[in-house]
Image (cartoon, rainbow, N blue to C red; front, side, top):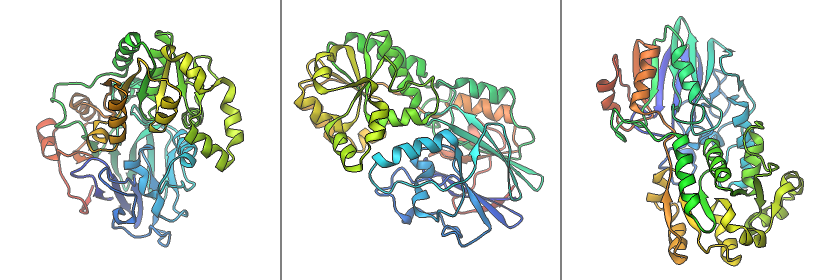
Length: 415
């Protein structure tokens, strides 16, 4: 079995790995680089068969529904099978109509069940559900020709599914020749530090919600389901309703998990901003709206109940909140990766906050494992080799793990 890291040996995001055995191939992840200005074919990996013309390319295994792991699917043949968790697939399908740009349409393929192996040509692929900020995220064991690779994907141990990490290290796959290990946290925090837990995020939100006299605006991704749960729980603890839009309602429904907040819960309200009302009318999404309209409110209700409401904020809410005079005593909580803010993606939000003298708070935690937990995984799996991937600091791996073997992007090597 041979392996090539097309992208990710020295960077975070844009992940893509190819494995080859008996003349047949699989791609693992197919991500858009984080620094990509647009979603363009220029970022495609240099490999054959992406037009569907080469039967040796058996398919693409997507570990989780983040653009830096699946975004380039927009540029390949729909005849190439794509593997993904069933809930992740539904989430991306629910999100697609709402989002601008070159959003991938997912080809049919394999739907993962954690621990259940899939035969794909000469490969035996076993997915493992992991704790990550993306819902329905997986690591993979890939076996062929008597060799075994473990691809960690993106994972952590401090989210609301931390038990998945504990289960993995308590009962790890055995006889692993190569561990492709993500190292997003290496160099970002100390080797003996841990990230804030999702439970601690909930506590921090409770403190701010309790001290807020008006509307609490929490700016996070609707696809960060762990964070939605934290915001929901903090809102309940402070006697606030969580107000969502139709996009968020559709994402939550797509999880298929009735333990996840849903639009018909009594603690939830649905508010449709004007920009989204136009989308609904133009696209005739009336059945979708009807399905989620049980607890629908309008701007006057939000104004009246501002001090008892938490709005899952999106930039398109700004104009409705201004027109509805909903901003007296409001606070804004930024709960996403700092890079989006620092790189200017939300400069219009900065200006808007300044205009209305709305204070900003940062409450967030990483979707990735701390170095401490990376060490735990390596010790549990005990691979013959640890290969750096999804890290800006591959040179630090030998300080943290035994048997490190680095490979460059584009380099083919034998397992």
